Image 1 (cartoon, rainbow, N blue to C red):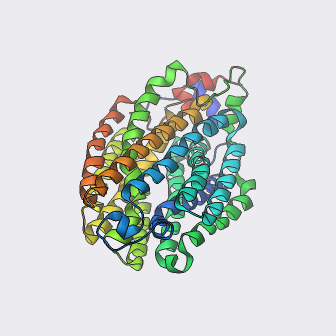
Image 2 (tube, rainbow, N blue to C red):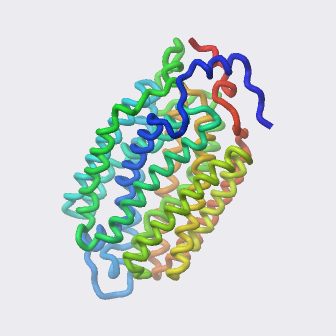
Image 3 (cartoon, rainbow, N blue to C red):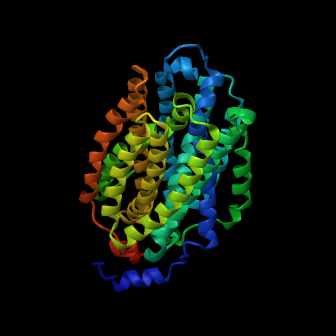
Length: 433
């Protein structure tokens, strides 16, 4: 049962300028997530072309012979790019002091500009280095977009707003994958990355729609508002941050390699036709939309914790299925993985914002991102190294993904926040002027 709201929290809520999930302010944030998805997912969608064009394809049966670079080199390169996302922590933390709007616009525009520059990479490690500079900026975009959407809405619309942001990111990532699948022969990876100039122009054109959340402005007005330093979190919140960090680490051990190697696996290992991959991505997009709607309903009706637990386990199982070796399993595993991730997004996004007060919310989200980066790095290195031994992608998936699903049980160490406003969870914020 939902706990009653105090008079102070109701008064504080009525004084805030909140939005519905479909209002222009939230739509603009979803557009930044879309742009970020297009920019970030390009390295995944075009990995096969990056490998073959910047590596050396030869006659033979190894991964290096087939795709131009070894699984270890690809895993290390992707791990470096992921590891660079650690730079997003101070950027996200700065938003707790300088404001959400200012930071999200800067990191999105500069991050997309660097994605365009990556199109001119003269070699694989140059590509890794250039893309690594843009990765933390776009990672900060994703985190801040969820924070802003949650802060702009009440409990009635929060899960829907978070789902909308996830949908925006998914549309951007899906567009990148579809464009690559249908036009990689004509564009190559350089053309795919050069196209990032289009979402860059889109973000610039809607920058006036993006507003500073009123929850942040209320928290900023408090005299005791702290200056975040590299995502500093007070002792009161560290246990929750630690639990969430372990979950994010384990989740990204699965999603890091599962997402990063999938299109290379489809293109160069099971030799799936480009149009089939495009249809797979389009079908997954439709299924993902259904998943977001169901995830929103489950998060609001059943709760954040049970929805997150089931979805995380499903993500691990679907990842193992995708890499089991056949084309039908790849298609089924990918679509089920998108469905599972879509079920997870509204519940986890809402939980992250509701567990912490406004003054440290972005910094706490930054630690979630940081733990996810470290988990993805570990997953990429392990997955690539195992896959290198006899071209064993199925074994790599089982060894990497399945043990990590056990961390889903940790969601039950956190309180359920379904139906609660931050002002009732953190009454000291309700008393601020």
